[in-house]
Amino acid sequence: MNTSELFGKEVAENIRCLGNDPTLFLESLTWMLRAGIVGGYTYNFRWLGRPIIQYPQDMVAMQELIWQIKPDLIIETGIAHGGSLIFSASMLAQLDMCEAIEEGKSFDPKVSNRKVLGIDIDIRAHNRAAIEAHPMASRIQMIQGSSIAQDVIEQVHAIAANYSRVLVCLDSNHTHEHVLAELNAYAPLTSKDSYCVVFDTIVEDMPTEMFPDRPWGPGNNPKTAVWEYLKSHPEFEIDKLIQSKLLITVAPDGYLKRIR
Image 1 (cartoon, rainbow, N blue to C red):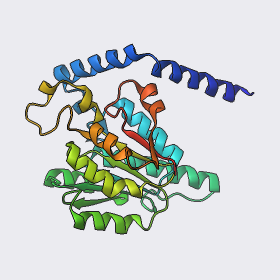
Image 2: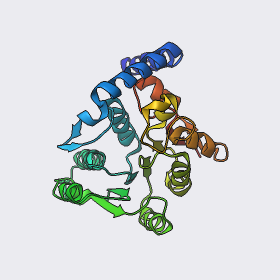
Image 3: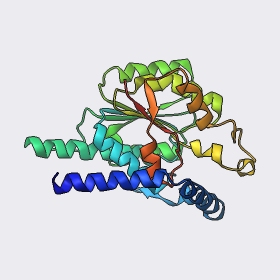
């Protein structure tokens, strides 16, 4: 076994130990609850100048997945300020650059077959303008409309038909009904060995009073939708190793790997 293999084995054991310690999850949850209440933690970060509204830990996990999968298309529901679209587009740009270097070809950052497709029911004019003015804009396409509207679903499926490796990220309305509808609409587009990532499953683990002005909460959220969806979709499984590795994540039980 070489040095790299030994290191990989050590890391795998570290992650196994973290995942087998239930107190770590509770301590992480307590920290997230406090950080969210006191400092609006997820609002504090930007990616290449745009607010991303994600935990840095989940951003690192997404970077690892994108490098591993090397997707041609990333589908995202929920746009907000556009930071996640910019993040995904920049990751795809890096894939193109690395592949060009490996193949000894020239690299034009504005020319790529890879794309990020974002869907949102309300793309605010100032956010759209900022996204379209960003250097990553050529890699991004946006659709305004409800992610579970039939015409929007048909548009997304038509676009996805032109790509072979697809990664899906669901992060819009967080009610059980809406997320389950999104899973039914978009999870089937996930290519084998890729992921459908469902964000904010952590809502199930938070106290009800955290969501006084929201239609979701414990018992009605992305995690309950994931559990319901998986009952009849054995082609997906929860990748528990990711949440064990991160500990601090908005998506426990939300990293769904397509295994068949």
